[in-house]
Amino acid sequence: MLIAVIVVVFPINWVLTSAPWTLFVSQGIALLVWGIQSSIHSTVMSEQSPTEARATSVGIWTSVGAALSGGTAPYLYAWLNSMDVGWIFSAYIVVLALVTLVAVRFIPETAGLEMDRIPLPGEEKVSSEDESTAVPVGR
Image 1: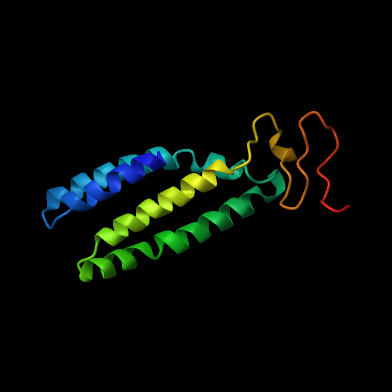
Image 2: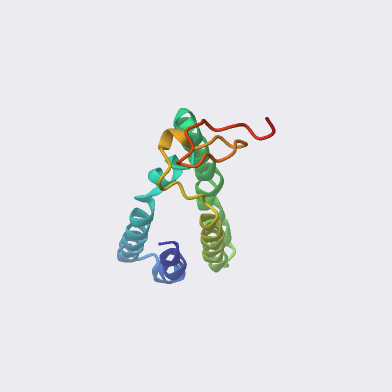
């Protein structure tokens, strides 16, 4: 769905004018794309953390991401539009989507691994056949 973000971000910005119907159409398309891609967000995030650290890690990383990109986005958009270079904001969204596509490629696969056996950062990955617990690296 990140490709959908890349595809629709410029057309949404071009459609958007001061007419109310353009805001409705733009928001409708954007919310459709956002809803489809964010539907798996909590699952993907929770699979990256062991059970004992799941709530903390999902909460922290979701909050940091929202603060850095979501918190600054409206100000950046308004500032760029005030200088008549609003297309730069669309390019910024495309760059963020491309960075996310690269990052998603490196998310470790947790299929077949019991959720309570996902190692903490710095611990060696335990195979599903191995009955021992995760071992800290260097011990």
